[in-house]
Image (cartoon, rainbow, N blue to C red):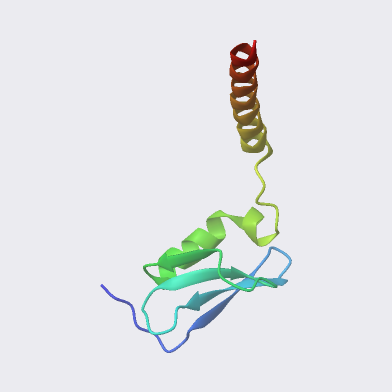
Length: 97
């Protein structure tokens, strides 16, 4: 079911009641997006309903606080790229002699 509403912007607040962003209906569409305060564009788009957008906003408070960096995932990616680079360097070294 497509949801139509007159409101096109819903504020998102943190646990202290501070405004941290908005749930915004995309222009000319029934889809919604999430936009953190101070950002030029939404960081999540094409959400099918307002209720789904509200649920998603509630499930990820760290994104609204700007703490969306996952250290474990960052270290894993660094390890993978380091292994790839080491393999390439070893291949080049053995090819050169």
